[in-house]
Figure 1 (cartoon, rainbow, N blue to C red):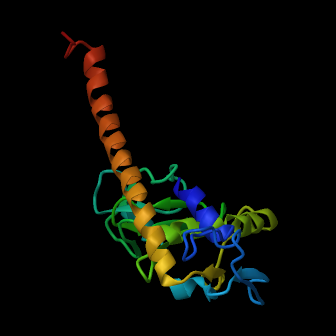
Figure 2: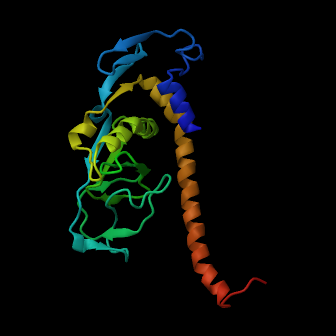
Figure 3: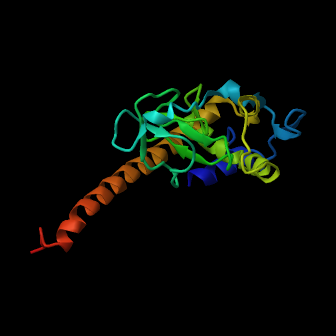
Length: 227
């Protein structure tokens, strides 16, 4: 639902105008933007990603600090442990270097470039990832904007090698069409609750999975039984 709304408003430019009608389909004025090489709504402007997002490039800790016994901070080297939306916690480090905050976007900057997850908790990120959050607190827009960059990322994967990567400058200088603040606020108000529900459901699923893994062996060996 959120992705469909993003595409309708910010890709097709049919966000609600002052009369509640689809902007572009209702004849809203579009102007050519030389930087983006396409037409965008009259009141919008082009911006670089660094202008709208705080970006942290990952740095790998000392390899001897890695462990799976929960010693230290959750650690993600790259997209290996990524899921549909949130990564699975497997590795920890007791010598963290670069950090991602809870709800930051985790972006793979090494092959495959452009894979995205959301940080469930504060964590340490290695050189295969970058962490992003919105400077203006429009995190939902930023999530779907990064997904919208997928065509560019897929191209980099296509022309690159197995060890292809995206540099800090390349990431920071990605250009996007940036809407007016009131439209971003409206989008955030409609979509942020969906993001919170996805996160809540994911946490519940993880708890249920842990409970299953604890109970199932005892059921199988007769330690407990269902009356």
